[in-house]
Length: 273
Image 1: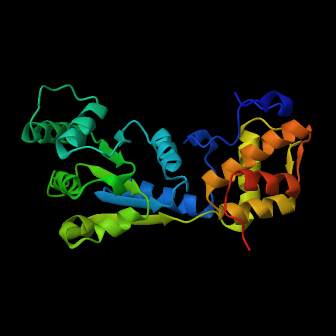
Image 2: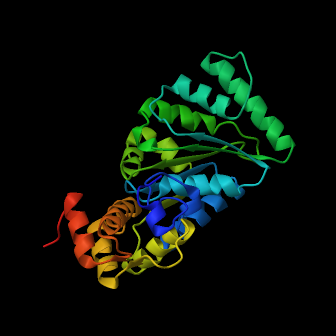
Image 3: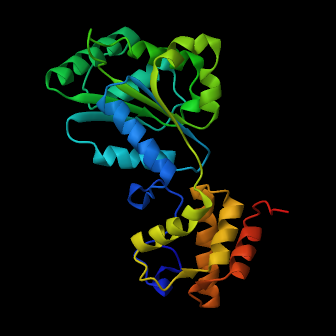
């Protein structure tokens, strides 16, 4: 519990930097990203690619997507990409809840293939989301490509969403990964919030946390936050959280430009000229 919650009458801290889907704010770009990924899953496009800068809300968006998929979509969410090809296969099989004695790569692929066929026969879809995919080695990416061979003449048996920082796009440009790159059916890059979305974003998170409207970020304060954070949600959260703490110390519900400026300087974010 944040030290200032009781003072402001909040149920929870509004500007945590954790990936809580309950706080997801659908900016124009986040809505487009969400629609693209939903389309890719529904239409069984096979490989999906979602990229964005650090703190742009990729993981939060994925968690929100998982919360809204129906029971006919089986999912696995891999958060740690620092795995070998064999470890990744084991992680996917485990996350799907498949109980098996398979240990080798071929045994695991056969087990997974059987699971996928069973799901297709039930009319189910299967999705694997791999977060921080820019950290995957070329060998693991090649193993992921081979999973796309698990298909029928008409249907992709598994949809794989590669989620990562812009470096993922650069990595996939490597000639050795051309076969994987050519199989990506949906691509989307999440851009930062537009300046006119920063204020609504802040108000949205305050409302979700239980604010009754008393907490006010002055228009000039919102402008400052947008400029310093460059529209990146995580940086906006850091400045706003620090500002609420300062407001608690000064016993005020009004976040003035002076408070915000001081908090930005304390966070050691770059100061624009």
